[in-house]
Image 1: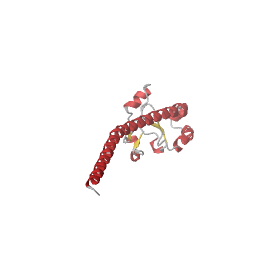
Image 2 (image 1 turned 90 degrees about the horizontal axis):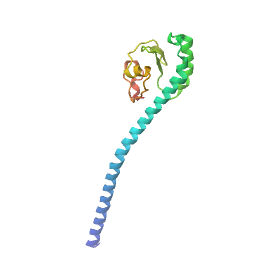
Image 3 (image 1 turned 90 degrees about the vertical axis):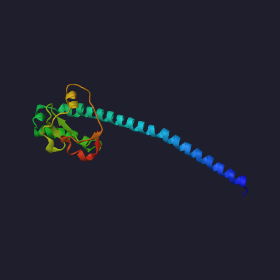
Image 4 (image 1 turned 180 degrees about the horizontal axis):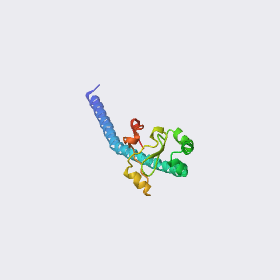
Length: 156
């Protein structure tokens, strides 16, 4: 090989290396913010979906069964609610269902030992009972009433 051929090959390799480096940097600069944006949008969509599904469950399944018998922990009323909620609990999308009264007492839970226990209500629950908007968050469940979900990671 002659010296001009070697020089030409080096220049071509250097040009290709620069092209690939600039292309990779451009890809990273564009893909990184897009990935964060997509994750944020997906999280917002999941939260809205969870909020809507929970509202439908409350309005159409649980709400009609909130009777004085259920609030007094009548076994027949609890069994009826258990039967109506069974399909929801069989679904992998629902981890736990708890029904509370306005004082913070668990009226129903799929974990029977929680029924009848009193817990301090969070601000969002008080606002919801006063007709405020439903809320949903994605976080680890660390509150006292969530002892059975504490090891499940982040839940809505």
